[in-house]
Image (cartoon, rainbow, N blue to C red; front, side, top):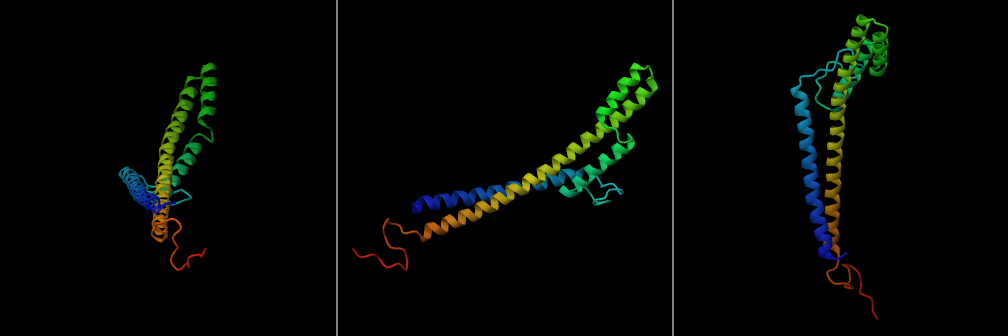
Length: 169
């Protein structure tokens, strides 16, 4: 690799690393800010982080999990699809009161699914932000390594490297 190519690769890698770290940190901060604005607290009966403010990946995950537990508890473990089949069966049997009750449960499960999806989106976004920061750090390391190689490499092909005795012909 030529000296100038190594220097350019090092410089571009360092610049990209800085951009990645800043972008990842800003993304993390935006997610945290938006979650904090919602004033969500992990339910007290959660097995993870009970009572914690939802403002990070672990608390968002914990709240998503307990929402699912609550929804399943409200429907005696029945899923959205299962309740749909029961609503249809109750309507076909002419039991409108049961159909309405089951539809209410189905709406509860649907809302829980939407909330969980939103919280899981935050968890994934935190993961992506962390990945981008990590990649930025690697790019900085690679950039520093390329610049180090560029400084150590001889400027002229065939020229001896520092400390090396030139070969005699």
